[in-house]
Length: 279
Image 1 (cartoon, rainbow, N blue to C red):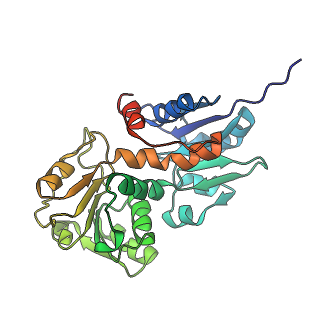
Image 2 (cartoon, rainbow, N blue to C red):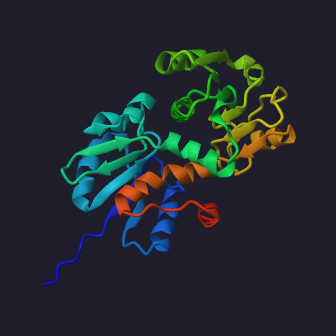
Image 3 (cartoon, rainbow, N blue to C red):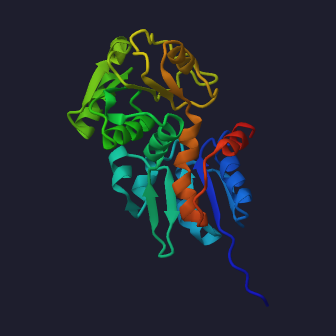
């Protein structure tokens, strides 16, 4: 009998999960690099998550991405949690180690910054304050990343001000909270403006906040990528801002996981974008 090496499996865990573009992305990379492996969507209910995570390595899984509603829960189920995942309070990338331990990380911030560097190569983090709309899990990853690369001040507006104020407690004095009704005013003087809310996403309400105070030459980016060019980005571009869409964040955040699971660091390029957009 001939022994065959075990084909590595990975996937994305969420509920619901059918909408995820991650299988199209990882499937494209697996085909591009001729890697024998599979990446599949896994719709797992919250009540079954712990049992599923313990079973997956036995089934041949080497890791997984994690999305809503499990990104916070997996921190309590992992054996090893990176400092950045602990700071953000959520994980999006799991590695099932050979010693049986589950390693949890958060690569959203890495993906966010890599997207800016690729699509706005002249962007300078230290050029001025950043304004961030929203104070959810994605915002935590974005704020942590902005502070790490040297943004001098991060201003946050959220519908619930208490959530924005919690950022100051967690991330320090370089963070300032604003009432949602003053969100348009906090943009003034900012070199970077980020929408981390679902406003403007297909099927959701439009962004609706005036960008009149945005400086010409500022960088505006939206983590929403359906549609690729949101109304927020359209208005920012009309006001002279440089814009970066959110698809690149999705692509770049996937790079570290793919490399760890399948042993090859994938490239993010126009072919990658087209493969995901056409899925």
